[in-house]
Amino acid sequence: MSIHKEVKRVTTHVLQKMKEDGEKISMLTAYDFSMARIFDDAGMDVILVGDSASNVMAGHETTLPITLDQMIYHASSVVRAIRRSFVVVDLPFGSYQGNSKEALSSAIRIMKETGAHGIKIEGGEEIIESVKRIISSGVPVMGHLGLTPQSIYKFGTYAVRATEEAEAQKLLKDALLLQEAGCFAIVLEKIPALLGKQVAESLHIPTIGIGAGKYVDGQVLVMHDMLGINKEFKPRFLRRYLNLYEDIYNATRQYINDVKGQDFPNENEQY
Ligand code: KIV
Image (cartoon, rainbow, N blue to C red; front, side):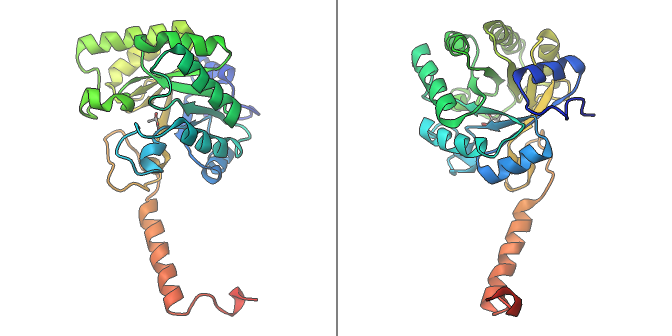
C-alpha cells in the first residue's frame, strides 16, 4: 500500500502525513551516487547517509572514526542522485557533543555543502539544547534513541536496549523531549517491539525502527545488510533481500577465469 507514491518530493510534511494516514515509511542507507539513484528510482521515502559508512564503506570496527568531512563527501554524492527521496545525514561522533554552537555549525556545514534535507543526531536529554538550536536555524532534525552506536564503548555491547523498566521509561521521556524540541522523526534502534509500540503511540511524529518491531511508523536498514553484501552480520532483526556477496564473488571469479582463459574479450567485444 503506497498512498503517497505519487508525491514528487518527500518532505517532513509528507512523512508526517504518512504517519497520520497509517502508511509505513521506508528508509535505507546509501553512501554513494549509484546506489542512491537506484533507491530513489525505486521509490524509497528516506535515504539515510548513516555514519555506518564508517563500518561498511571504510572498514572501521565502530562508527566513531568517521569525520564530518568524510560524511560530507558521502552525502554530497548521494544528494546528486536524488529526485524524490528525503535525504538525512548523520552528525558524526565528535561533531556535536562539545556544545550546541559546535552542533549547529556541523549541521550547517552538512546542509550547505551537501544539499541534504535534514540531519540525524544520537541521544536524548543530554543533547536537547543542540537539537533546539539546530531546529531554530531551520534545519530538520531526526532523533536516534535505543542502541546509539556512537556510545558503544559506554554500553559495552550491541545487545537489545531498554529491556529494563528504568531504561524504557528514560527512552520514552527522551522521545517526548525530542518531539517537544521539534524533531520531525525519531529512529529507534534495537529495542523490544512492545516498547517501540508504546513510543510510536505516544508520539505524533513518525518513529522509524531498526530492530524495534513492527508497530513503529517505518523501517530502516543498512543497505549492505539488506542486500547481503555483509556475510557475517546476522542480527535477528535483519531480513536479507539478496545475497550479493555470493553473486559478486561468483561474477568476480568468472571474470578472472575469462581473462586468464583468454575468453574475454571476444571478437564482438573489441574494436
Ligand atoms: O548509521 C546508520 O546507518 C544508522 C542506522 C542504523 C539507523 O544510524
